[in-house]
Length: 514
Image (cartoon, rainbow, N blue to C red):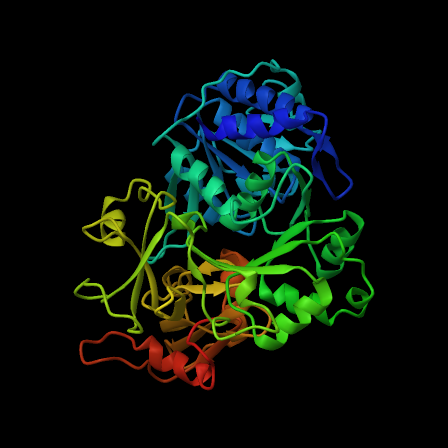
């Protein structure tokens, strides 16, 4: 079995059924099969061999899946890239991955102007024949509609996902074929998705949640409703007009939708299940969501390193007429996944109710980081548990409660931000002598990064620092506020006490992370 075969099997249920709709585009499973066959052969013609990496950057569109499945059929590894990254960030990731080819949407092609690798541009009418830049449609049409069936299997890699790094640079999370297959099957079995389902996926495909949710639907022969530039209004429209049966979103979006007057009169009768993540919801939002959507709610907890499959809080714990004592939890481990709470220093398992590091072991966990043996060794315990960096506890019923983070990771609107990466960039500002970035509560995004800076010569302009950041990084990574201080708090050994910086912002909060 291979991941490509899982999608072939889903397509074979009804080849003429619609695989993708939304944003004015409809393609069938037969169309997807044909386009991905051509993509596989087009990659091979450019010299892509088994195990070679292929970069992809664009907003949600059918081309992502044509290339993803095409790379699978060619035995290649897709590197899905965040379209919010700067040119410098993209260049670093492509170079680190050793990408042989990169496929990009036309708006993002200018970010790749300095690369010496072949660039295939979607909707590019200016490509010159024989140049190192190709128009996507012409590139595909020139290749054979024949499945090469060079699928990666077992422990061979199918994806390389870049996650923000603890030391200032992202890390490439390795995804094997068997890991992705298991994740799709295990997480998919928790929901009632079938060939008649229509799943709205507003989350970017490069994100483990968006890509995974779409994969589950495709392997079941269902329809993916894609959203290229989602807004609350467009999501509301698609949920109703496309008769969506399933969707995934973050609580911040749920909050906006439940407050919309248009949602109160909307017909959500087709919607059966909604999964949310990145943060829990309040009892008030739960009540509003049930009254608005009238469907089952699920909360998921996971990381890029676990393919988003770690724990799930089901609808039985989210019934207004039931016991809501578990609502602040992240649910229980998905069958097949082990979760333990361990002492972060000594590593031994802790008793029920004690707070320690959440560690995870199971078939969904990454084999490690690309070309980074040190980070891989640091991320795993001696007996193979992945160290999440999250502090939490587990009750007698196996429900996990996230309390805080050991790592400085900030999760803002579902995107991971490591302060070290932001600090590395801003430390080059000529007016900044010292800097510390922390996460604070955000009603819209769960958490938001802010910066504390010490001026080099007595003066630094906060607005100028934010502008400096936005020129060099994806905007979700940039601090929303800059606080100028005379000194940063430190312990006796000189380490910055970030918890002291964060603490005033988290007073009266139920937990110390979003």
